[in-house]
Image 1 (cartoon, one colour):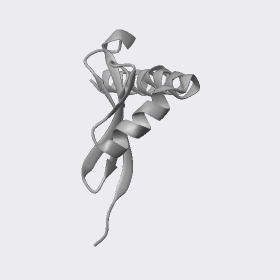
Image 2: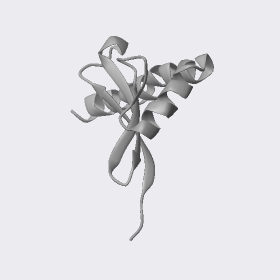
Image 3: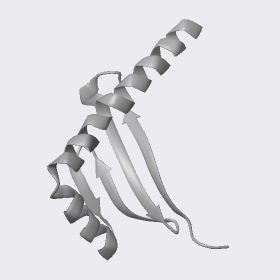
Image 4: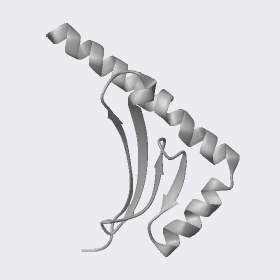
Length: 91
């Protein structure tokens, strides 16, 4: 019993080109996503009252947005390139 509070990051892509990759960072409490950053949108979006307040705060800080926007290349592109090469090697 109890509540879960967690953050999920994922990369959605259909090719290894940076323009075809989306970085998504979701914030969840008790199975309800309350805020999300999407590299396609370029900012945080809140889905609850608490999420809207946090999204406004995070979006007003240029350093927070810059870090999240950089994750697309730092996390997604890096790992997709590794996975893609591993798949080619095995095929």
